[in-house]
Amino acid sequence: MVKAKDIRKRALDGDPKAQCTVGQMYISENNYDEGIKWYRLAAEQGSDEAQRFMSDMFYYGGNGVESDFKEAAKWYRRVAERGDPNAQYMMGEMYEEGKGVPKDDGEAVRWYELAAEQGNEFAQRKIADMCLSDKGASTDVPKAVKLYGLVINGSGACAEDAYQKLIGIDGNEEAAKWRITSADPEDADSLFILGMKYLYGLDVPWDPHKAVDLLKAAAGSGNEYAQSRLGMIFFHGVQGHNPDYSHYDIISPDQEESIKWFKMAAEHGDRDIQFMLGWMYHNGSGVCKDEKEARRLLELAAGQGHVLAKRALLHPDILNL
Image 1 (cartoon, rainbow, N blue to C red):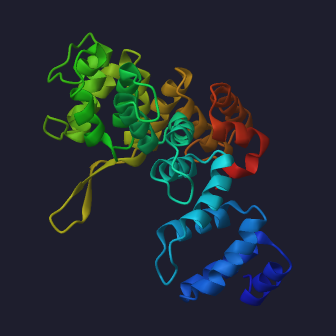
Image 2: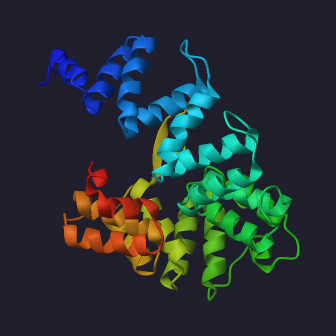
């Protein structure tokens, strides 16, 4: 077992990982001044963990630390420039609101676009909103419709908001599809849309089991969005909530079923799933460890512009558990 004094010695010798550990020790003791000092040393050496800590600490403040948007922007920028979509979103927000940087809608759009391309749902929603309002981005209704659809197909964090904006768009055939309350069994797109509506309870009763049935029908007809969504459903499971806020499984996680759908989505070209499967094969998580297959999938994702896949091909250690 590594002793605290050994970690401190490594930190004093300039080891950024040890500096983060020492910083966390002080933070756990509510000594934020000393903790930040050690995190700053690690951040200045390029530690991803430390730079993320510094970004959030100075953006949100708290625990005796005052918000400093200029300092937060400095660290978010460093993380964002390495391709992190969450940091890119934060840079977009800071430029949009003029926090720590000059207010600049064009620069905000640039950062939001980078984050949106990597699947950040908040950035996708922002760009969609801007495409309808002509704020910083050119008015582009078809692009807004596409992005709102991607948001709904995401984790669900912004699904309700995106759905309401989507069905409020008039004169667009793709937007109109989301107003359906029944699906043509021969139409994979309508099956997928209705399945997503039942998954999140969007103008229909919340029914995860019915959602899965509809998504399976869509996936079986080749809809890659349905395939990737089924993979995520069986990877995480779906939980319900009791009155006392405890959870229970409505659909239990099923790794074998999840991987089956992930493989289909990956072969149909879903770059996010290609990256995720590459990570799983690299680590032997849910599948037999296979570096050759991991690299194949990462190369497919990188070939479609997936930033993290490109980084992982150059620095495979970022994939390690």
